[in-house]
Length: 356
Image 1 (cartoon, rainbow, N blue to C red):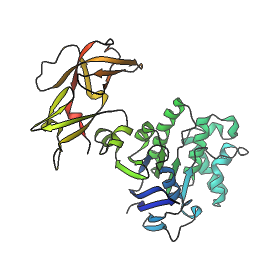
Image 2: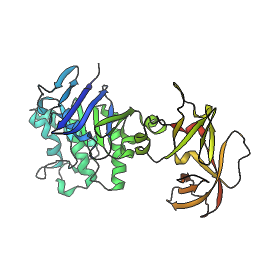
Image 3: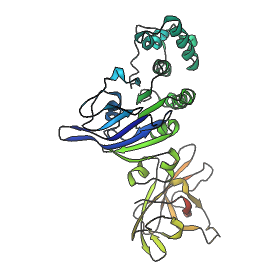
Image 4: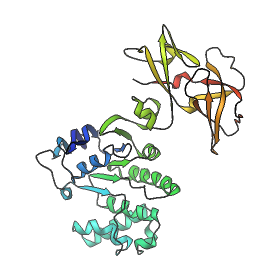
């Protein structure tokens, strides 16, 4: 049986529709991220799951029982869910151990059992030595661990996280991504994670639901979202890409500056339309000073219009004859090309994605 099911849920505020016809099913122990730009409806969806809002349409089910519908809604405190907010919401007048054990106290867990569970979870989140400190004495990352420990120790049916890392600096955010994934792998709590950060979602999630303007664009595993996006929005939002328009003529698709065989695009189903839009990831294009001798490779000549050195890689903009926009190309640090230098591009056609 599925753990959490959202069936055709919508949420309307006056004339504004924040969430429209949202469908999602989470299996037991799965971590699914709601990913999208600000205002796309992901936090509204999370609050409906938590019980802070009632859906205008549709239902939410937990373990096969309806907990939210337009006519009735189970109160948040009866949903067996824990929620971690952007602000952490830990009490400044309580020690680390008291903060973590507060939920157990509210649930009237016996003192001995509560102490044992608090001690265990503090060791898991590596805060055992800080149990008697107050929040003001902790770093941002340590405060986030306190919030995680407090939510996990009560053994919730579902864990909800609303932009939990947005207040941390870049290095701490990267560290906490892996910490959240480690804790999920250890406890296997069914989790809904809201974020606008693509890297955060890719690292932590089993699956990602990409949202745009209140609707779900695509739900898939991280690799498939990046490698085979189904819409232009998903292709542009998950990582960087080049959108290139072409025309189908017989068995060949002609783009500005290069051509690709219809067969190379590997399109299933109804085939290609007359006007073709493809997504080409920057790392799917290689730069050469001489044309490849392999006649099966897709090559075109251009010139370096712009370049940026980013330490781990070069970001090149390559102008092709007749093309309105340059192609962005990612190259290794040692692959140095000068501005206005003539180059050949070699495109890995196996990584081209046709956007419907």
